[in-house]
Amino acid sequence: MQLFGTQEIRNNQFYMGGVSMEELKETYGTPLYVMDEQALTENMRLFQESFRHERLDTEVIYASKAFMNRAMVRLLKDSGLSLDVVSGGELYTAAKEDFPRERIYFHGNNKSPEEIAYALKEGIGTFIVDHELEFQRIALLLKGDRRPQRILLRVNPGIEAHTHEYISTTKNDSKFGLSIFDEATADFIKKMASDRRFDFRGLHCHIGSQIFEEESFLKAAKTMVEYMRTLSEKGVQVRELNLGGGFGVHYVQGDEPLNLNKLFEKLLAQLYTLLEKENLLPVKIMIEPGRAITATAGITLYEVGSVKKTFGGMHYVFVDGSMADHIRTALYDARYTAKLTGRMMDPQSDTFRVTGKACESGDILVKEVRLPLPRPGELLAVFSTGAYHYSMASNYNRLTKPPVVFVKDGGSRLVVRRETYEDLIRNDL
Image (cartoon, rainbow, N blue to C red; front, side, top):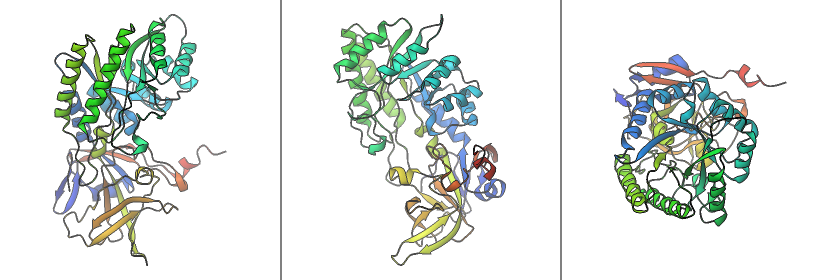
């Protein structure tokens, strides 16, 4: 199997950040989200160093929906990355760590008046406007003599990316943004650009997630520049172009993520050539990685409860987690790699389905994985769970959410505590 960051095998045992999984179990229990702190910071640095061009201003904005808590915000703050938030709760988390407001971008297709008012009060840098009614809502909540509010408009360039339909975001019927093929979109942009209460900076697009095709990103960039030329002919200057994220990561054998250094070199070179040719410079170019920073930096650690083979021939491994802490298999039919952390190199005896304790037939964590015959009490790690696992965790079946631990240099630290039964009823009346 492929190892990432500080992951290693010592004497048939799995380690991450120099820490054994047995040590983590003894200290924190299971289920447990484990994040490689060094890998997180190195991935942030990779994006900062790779997404650069000698003649273009660039910015890397972390998509916080992938994985967010106060410890993660502190890492991002120190790294110099900017931050994308999509809710009042994400903004509140960033504000509690005094994340620089000018580096915060507020996304979402249905920001509530309360969220908009809160963001304005906090003085966030930029709203990503989704549609005209939202623009009007923001305008109504602007108060007093203040600087013009920076905004971008999310648009849909209609690029087909080969990914799961639930995470493809630029189909013509997508709920996000406005189509560049609708003439009314350009009229709306002219309206925003002429409103002195706002500082219209430009455009945002995002073609989907978990994309392995270089051509999808290059085509999106070319299409957006063509639309910028159309807007320029109508008298609107685009000064910022945000191309979103979607950079695919490794989950299982056969996944082939793009070489980001090569992708960004080609992407930025293409953009500069096109922008110069169309006399559209200067333009800042932005991207929004989330999964690509956190996914392979995380694992989820479980304890095996039992093994069962059904009359129909299905060989199950039951663990002490569930779809409540690992929803992506049920939600997206996502695939994962799993290993018994104490027998990493042992011969595989059979194909197993890893399932949890939720009262659902669809409570599947890993559909198929080759393992040695698991024994009750052994530890099983599911890999590449650093994105959208902690973020999507729920209390279904009144299960408590696992804690989050950062590991680094042979040590570990708790950054999110394990929920208790008392936490489950805290808001009950």
